[in-house]
Image 1 (cartoon, rainbow, N blue to C red):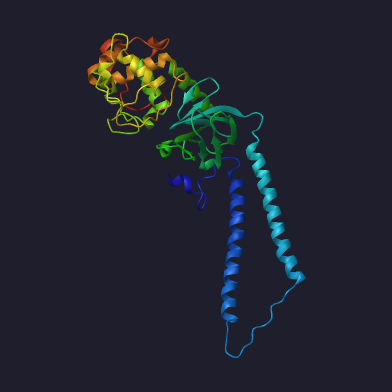
Image 2: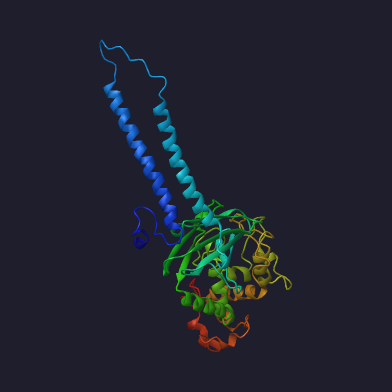
Length: 372
Ligand code: CUA
């Protein structure tokens, strides 16, 4: 954290090509404001003391007109304001005009997570970019207004449903371990403050390798690994805990057991047990909760979840179910024996056939991706 504040007095590190100019204008205005604040305050105090009312002294008549003084206090501020406008406008035009050769990443904001989609279709909950290359973000929202904010880049852009906004930056510092902070800067509901992500800036070759591995890995996983990855990648854990604690939504810890046993109670007082039938299976209930979260609401929670219809494939729902099973020792073996949801999963080296896989499966929130 300290490293982010080392080269600038009270601003975060300047880690983008235009950050220095943004700060320069800020400090310029601050300096002028501070100078006139001190000047006016000091003069005020001096005048109050010096020209205070005293015995036997008649007040002087005020001057009405002084051409030189009036020109001075009009022309000097005018020059300053025009100068600030020119510098600010040039900087603004630079910030809103992406270079033609920019690398494009789609950003989807949703209550309460970020999804960054790369040109090859790979989606991640964090933003990974190559250093020294212009990056263009196309930003849209699935629900309400959010705002993407990366202080180290001096970058902020609203993320509006039904609109595709643009923003761009060029990162100037490699930061592939800690990452720069990325926040939502528009109050968007209960978990607004947890709608955060990291920006990892890689060397260009490392970035290419990261994307290659991350994208391939997606197709080479067992359903449990894929499910675990989805839960992290799509930011599910912002609302659903993995350790049983109560958050915006029900915990994933024993969600499968609760579902199979029909223990879930809904807001209207009915229980899942009364709904489970041969044609309404526990799997069906999970899929429904993901695709049509408004169909039923679990008692004790406010409706908050957006629909993931068209965003999470049916294969991935299968993977999520396998992952939920793997969180419970009772169902773990079943989850690991599940049919492979992704093509070419046999080639996944971390998994040996049958029970041997048990110890190598990620059961926690750690992403199964190559960074871990
Ligand atoms: Cu999204 Cu605040």
